Every structure is written in structure tokens, then in C-alpha cells.
Figure 1 (tube, helix red, strand yellow):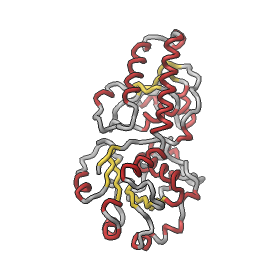
Figure 2 (tube, helix red, strand yellow; figure 1 turned 180 degrees about the horizontal axis):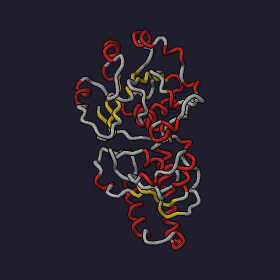
Figure 3 (cartoon, one colour; figure 1 turned 180 degrees about the vertical axis):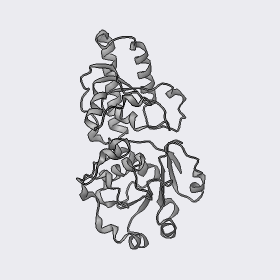
Figure 4 (tube, one colour; figure 1 turned 60 degrees about the vertical axis):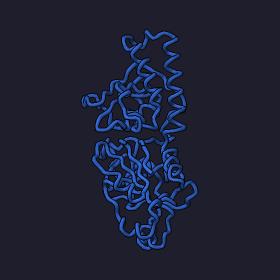
Length: 296
């Protein structure tokens, strides 16, 4: 009942065609703060779109939103040491294709972009096309939500309660919620409301973690039924929802004692999106819950 999980990205953020390239390698380097010069999503994405390759790496955890941003913008991740990644971490990513990209970059890294041969350009474009196709089919927010339902055998549920403790930005909780909203609309109810994933004129998204890029300001307000907020306890008692998902069991599990009285153990799904954690997920497995861990 334990499964790997990864971040994901909205299908709408994935480029439709391979962008025109003017750089061999992106100037954005993980960990080098002087290269973090982009303050908005448009300019940030454009840096990847005009580059054949972009460096990404393990930081706090192996999985990183940057991987998905690079892939979605038609760029090849250059990921040194990806071979050392545990098999059940980043398990949904195309590791073999990324290793292929590493080898391709190492074969051309000594060149300027204008010196690339037609064969080398073709090899880059073929690999980009493969990576884009993989991303569209496997790494979108709604495919991740579908993956969770398939692994838990809840493909046919009609209503989902998506609970949070701390509502500060959490990549896994936020993008996974987006996926369930895409599938279920307001029939997936987030409580408390994760305000920053919704479109609003009252939120300074750029002040949020990661400048709010990729994971905020996405969902229409109509996808949250405010009336359900007022009846949350009674709806739990009456089992209005088919299953309950905790977006991060590290960051709070409201109503857990009540929910375990009403719901079967396997109707409760727990997510862990932490970079580094010492959680004893066996504790939750022994209780009979499904558990999805990012850095497994």
C-alpha cells in the first residue's frame, strides 16, 4: 500500500512544438543564486525554451519542480549523477531518456550552438520530441491524480475530500490538488481552501515560495464550493465523500480521529512531498492507509 509519487505540471504549460533555440545550455544553474534572475513565469520559461539543455540536479531531494519546468518547455534536462537516484525515487520520470540527454550534452558541450552539425541538431530535436511526448502522457497534474486513483483502486469515486493542515505552499500537495480538480471539479473539495492555487486579484503570487511560478494562480474560483466549508464536520460524519486524501501528512491531519471512525482504513490516502524526512510511513501502513512518498 506504499507507492512512489512525483511532482507534476499542468498540461497547459507544456509547449505544443519544439521552440526555436538560441543557446546550447541555459544560464540558470541550480544553487548559483546569481543566475536566478527571473521574477516571472513567462521570462523564466522562455530561458528554457530557447536552450537545448538545462542543468538540473539533486538538491534537498532528488525530485524537483525544475525537472518538470525544463521538460515542459521543450528543453533537455542535463542531470549529472541521475544514475545514483534510488529506483523508487523519481520513479515516474523518464530516467533512461534523461541519461541519453546527458550523453548527448557531453558530446556537444565543447561547441557553440552555431557549430552544431545538422546531425547533432537532429539528435537534440528527436530527443526533445520524445521527452515532450513522455511529459504530456505521464507527468501532467491530471495523470498524477489518475495514477493515485489507479494505485488505490478508486477509479470510480465521485467525491473526494482533500485535507490540509498548514496551507502554505507545498509543491506536491498543490499540483496534485490541481490534478484532482481537473478531473473532479468542485467534487474534489479542498479544506481548508488552498487559496494560492486559485486565480485571484488579492494574492501577491510572486511573494510566495519559488516566486509562485508553475503551481499558483491556476484554478478558477468556481472549482471550490465555499458552501461545503461550512458543513465539513457533518459531511464527514455522513460520509458525503467517497475517499479522503491528506495532501501532506507531515503538515497536519485535521479531523483524523473523526475520519478514522467513519471511513475504512483503505479509504484514507496520505501523501508525503517532503525533500528530506525521517517519517515512519510504516506507522501509517500498519493502520491500513495508502501512502505515497516522493523521496521513497
